Length: 70
Ligand SMILES: [Zn+2]
Image (cartoon, rainbow, N blue to C red; front, side, top):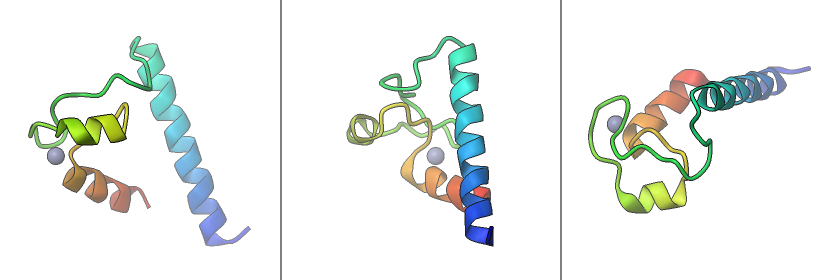
């Protein structure tokens, strides 16, 4: 198993946890997007919410979040 496989496994693990958390809170993981970014509080454009159902961050915060996660 190389480092990329490990990173993928870890990302899978995090995704599953995030999904479980959303379900535990009674939120649908799909089609229930936040209207504001959870990180910076800026409104998330409707087009992004339609393209990414369930997203909770604006584009710039999501990009930063994914880099940190990797
Ligand atoms: Zn943001």
